[in-house]
Amino acid sequence: GESVGLHLPTLSVQEGDNSIINCAYSNSASDYFIWYKQESGKGPQFIIDIRSNMDKRQGQRVTVLLNKTVKHLSLQIAATQPGDSAVYFCAEIASNTDKLIFGTGTRLQVFP
Amino acid sequence: EPEVTQTPSHQVTQMGQEVILRCVPISNHLYFYWYRQILGQKVEFLVSFYNNEISEKSEIFDDQFSVERPDGSNFTLKIRSTKLEDSAMYFCASSELGVREDEQFFGPGTRLTVL
Image (tube, rainbow over all chains, first blue to last red; front, top):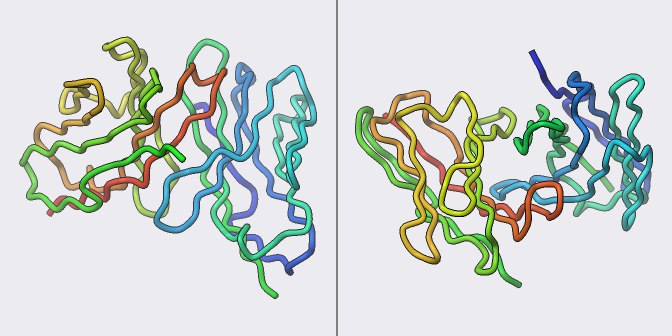
């Protein structure tokens, strides 16, 4: 079946280092991808998105890379801060639907 | 800053009972969504709603589920006869435009516990 999954369930990084969170997706019909951050006790929060006609998009301290050849998505966080500690989800939308399909999540832990 | 609100924050119910989860989307938003997240698992799409009708629904959203926008501000999710496996966090979200044109804003969630 179609699915979105993550390679690393937990990622621990030192404050100030860069973080890379990965995501694999299996639906080649997906044309829009979003990264969400979810802090404890809160709903998902939009971080950054990318369309399938792009392979890179940058935001403030975050960069999303899309490799359609291997169906891989990554989120890079520069100079990771304690406030970045959360669970990060990738989500995909197929071209013929508006349903967001979420991945299983990666927990990012930032230590001093 | 406008935000999506949800009530109650925690709902405990007996199996077989009906529950209504309430959401107040951001006021100028036109697209509304419900998602659920079973503890420790990924967020799952339930339903999207636009122009007073369901746009899309998942296979989870069976006949036991319904949504309604009873007035200009509330958006509700009703589960007619709750099952143990309905226990989850339920998130409401809204957006001004469609999912590809605009960010979805999520509420803080309602934790539903079915006993």
